[in-house]
Amino acid sequence: MGTDEGRREWARHWQYAQLPGLDLLRAHYVRHTFPRHAHDGYVIAAVTGGIEEVGLPGGTVRAGPDSVVLINPEVPHSARAGAPEGWAYATLYPSRDLIAEVADEIATLRGTPGFTADVVPDPHGARTITEVHRAAEAGNALAADTLLRGAVARMLSRHAGPLPTRAVRGAGGADAARARGVLEERMADPPSLEQLAAELGTSPFALLRAFRERYGMPPHTWLTDARVRRARRLLDAGTLPAEAAVTVGFTDQPHLNRHFTRIVGVPPGAYRRERA
Image (tube, rainbow, N blue to C red):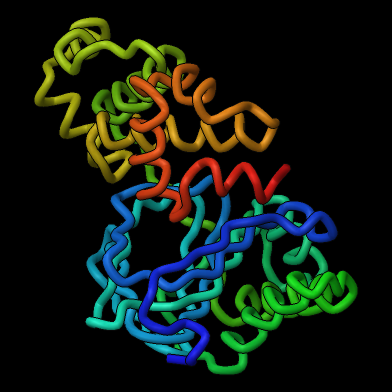
């Protein structure tokens, strides 16, 4: 691990105005663990030090220096340190539109692209991803955009195919999708599992099993993640953290702070300041 990472935890989650459709996270975590969550867009993360353990639907993978972690939209995953020194990484969160734009430019993929690998050893790719961060931090828009498109094109051309879809099977899958819709609509005052199942004409256990199969996590975990995602959109629009907390259904700002920090990797106040 480089000397700049050191032993302390630190993180910066931000956007560079000259790179629309992209979030950037550069961090070193030791004790921090990310609970199961998912993203609207893609994850392309270069591990620069230590070991990251990523929990995915197919099992846990370990990523060390010079490797790249690739995660598709809406894939539930968790993350934690896989070594005593934690892990350091530079992460790109490109939107679906940005990925589609680059995929169209390289013209080797048909339809919506999706990564076919979880972790790949790629020192050159990892170095390019970290250089995107450095160029953005230096305010060098030409270099940052060039490096970003090169990094995304490299990953898509080497490790992508048609985006896999999780099929909704039978009545259980349909009930899970309907339950998600109810939770999205009533996020600030959600029903209990028993109430939700009764509204949908099924049993709590059957709904729990179907929801977990469809979305990779139980309804209460999914709801917490959905609340944080909505809070992010509110903070992006300039809403104060205390107001965002109540709007999405958290008890108060400390409640938002706790879950937001665990899932996003930085507190909501720091997240909002980077976008001010």
